[in-house]
Image 1 (cartoon, helix red, strand yellow):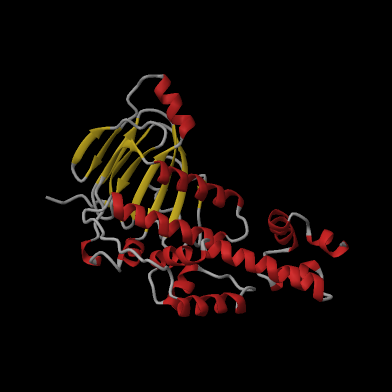
Image 2: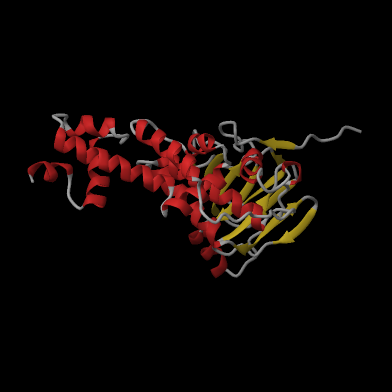
Length: 305
């Protein structure tokens, strides 16, 4: 007898789920290291049994789910690793589908939902200081429970995908770390043992990191690069930096960029557009918006004082 081959969905590839779903995604991220976001609008459907190469979190969007709840109908079923459950699927409920397990599901009505794919390597990198990487395994979860933090991350990532603003890479890096440690704490079969640090990032390492930031403000500074200088995992670096400085690396970088822009506005003949490029902003309008938000006036207004 021939054995039917199980489909594999790999969100590292473009249009990964198109062959298994009635319609393609309406939004799809590109270039996010270790993360991939898809937003779908689908009619009633059933997806055949498949596996994922990445860990998956699925979240139904509120409007479509509320419409289903008004009808007082079951919204569908899910099979996770051979176990079947009729899911609640209220607004904010999430499903966790670990990489490699067998999965299929159906929806009894049209639905809008998001899928966030996470590289297993991300959990290994974030958890390397306090969990044996070989023991990092997520627990499957049916879409019958809420997770406010993950729902907020979904919302922010979708907003970033739709609009895109300055500091996007740093924002994604920060959320990657937050999401990874949240999954390790709450959805991992082996609970991590977190260390406590009394004084935050050591002064010598902090000096190395801040000097690097000051010298490379014009470049795209990423959390992974800064944590590599400190020889720490991104999670520990982010935690210790904030503990020492009182703000995140992203906030610190933005403050230094604004300070440098103020200096150049007062002590150089460069145009505002040239200053924006030299201080790491995408363009003059990005500099103006951030400058006005932090300083309270625009660059042009500062020049006029």
